[in-house]
Image (cartoon, rainbow, N blue to C red):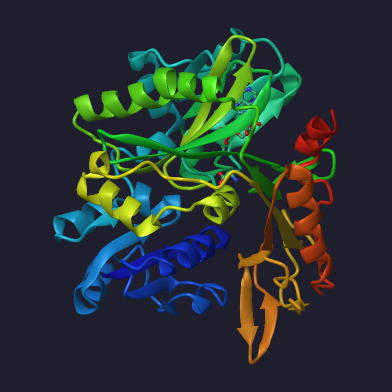
Length: 424
Ligand code: AMP
Ligand code: GLY
């Protein structure tokens, strides 16, 4: 089968790497891809917002499965357009992708399906939002309703800060994403991510992970898309995972199906492990980036078979994904300036980074002639495995140290919490 993968980041490089390993994959195309993805796929320039162009390409190249990596094309209904054209797509419909595209949608669903999540208020005007603030105590959690490239959440320590943030949101700081705002109760606990594949009926867990959202060591500084991740997340014990399936993921999939908007693809649940049990912080309608990189590093099953079964509604006939018993850990190398304006064009020499089983996924790279250079904020995802988090961390940083990227930086403490736990 020929496969088309849409996207250009480290997540898509990890997916391309895994898809290309499948005996079911004849030819892999990626649009637009990147120089790393080009090692596993043929890259083409295709505009994912032009649904007709994607359909025409898929027909011409006899594509049997389109894998949609990022959230924007999902929320934009690309999966619906492909399905209407008779082309199998991995990823939810526009309606179901509202789980990521609208915080308010997800909150209302949680209410209908009795899913544990923070108490909240949906506000469509600044006046209403200022009023609703009175029902909460600091710290205040304010969320722009729509997609805001991971930047739409503000945690404000004081009422004044919260009011200022609300002013900015309704003033268009996050564009139309902020025309509606959700205010919610602050939850305390440890955060962890749980991933499941579903075809709308059957659900198969595909691993757990934890990421590091802040740019600085010790979880300091501004939020980023993620500076590193590891899998598994042992804080999500077998018992907690069963509870997450029972109380959060299953009722979500069931309710969406019953309401006529079945969800298919990967469901990424961001969780807070509170003393009252796991609570849903957010859903994403795609794999996490860089969480996907560590999941793919551990996945032993055939990714094509799993994704095709999600797309075709036959997941119930497929064996559950098998992940290796060891740890995988990825360190993001970012360009100076990230998460502000990153310095682009810095040269990169990967050297012997992959010599001892590590894998360098490309996130923001480009080729200038034969020279690899940086072209984005997050540039490389240096990923390694080990029998423990401690070993995976050592292997990943050994690979990082083999790379020459003068304009880049990384956190040196990815996985530290787990390493500390292992030390006891
Ligand atoms: P989100 O984009 O919804 O994942 O939010 C970004 C980050 O804000 C999360 O990863 C949490 O660290 C934090 N956050 C979101 N909602 C809450 C909440 N209700 N209580 C505490 N922290 C939260
Ligand atoms: N790493 C967080 C995300 O992909 O949303």
